[in-house]
Amino acid sequence: QQQVKQSPQSLIVQKGGISIINCAYENTAFDYFPWYQQFPGKGPALLIAIRPDVSEKKEGRFTISFNKSAKQFSLHIMDSQPGDSATYFCAAIGSNFGNEKLTFGTGTRLTIIP
Amino acid sequence: DTGVSQDPRHKITKRGQNVTFRCDPISEHNRLYWYRQTLGQGPEFLTYFQNEAQLEKSRLLSDRFSAERPKGSFSTLEIQRTEQGDSAMYLCASSPVLAGTETQYFGPGTRLLVL
Image (cartoon, rainbow over all chains, first blue to last red; front, side, top):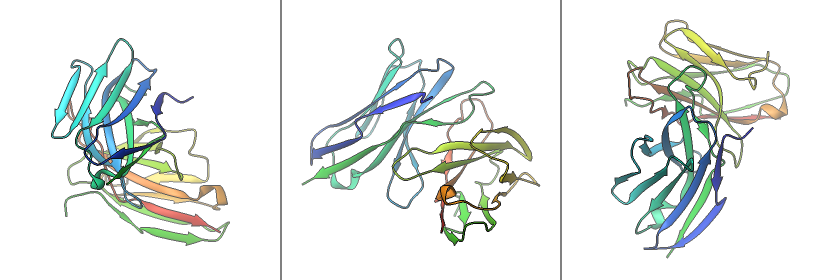
C-alpha cells in the first residue's frame, strides 16, 4: 500500500521557470515531511523539510507548501537552473513507534532545459 | 569526511553467492537505517537500529537478509543465496535520537548486481 503519492513522474521546465512537484499522504501519524534530491548514482540528499504546524517553509529558491487538512504538500523550485536537474523524492515520517522510518514517494525526474 | 559512508560502492555477484555490505554512520548518530532502491523507484525501508538494538524489520527483509550493528557504531547487511531480484541500490542512513531531529542523512549507497 503506497502511503505517499507523488506527481508528476517527470517534469520538463525551462531555465528560470518554476518547478512544482506534488505529494499526498494517507497516514495521519506522519509528522515530518522532507524532500530529497538525488543525482544518478548518488544517495538521496536532504533538500528541505517541513512540520505540519506551518503552512509554508522557504529556503533560498526552494519552498514547501503544506495543506494539513488535504494531507498534501508540494515543492516549488523558483528560478529553476540546469543544475537542479535531478530526481526529487517527497517523504514522510512519524515520531511514534511503527512510523519511525521514511516512506518515500515514487519520485519526479526533473529536467531543466536552457 | 563526516558523512555516512558505505562499502563497497559496487558489487557484482553470481546468483547463489553471499554478499555483505558495510555502513559507517555519522559519528554520534544513534539510529541507523537500511533502505533498498530499485531503478525508477523511491527507497524502501528494510530495517533500523537504535544503538545496537534492531527495532524494526520490514516484511521486505526475507530470511536471506540479516543486519547487525554489534557495537552500536557501524552496521553490516548480509544477503545469503542472492537472487537476481536482489539487484538494487542498498542505502544506509543515520540520524540522531533527539526530539525534533527526524532528519536522516544518506550514504552514497552500494549498487548490487546479481548475475
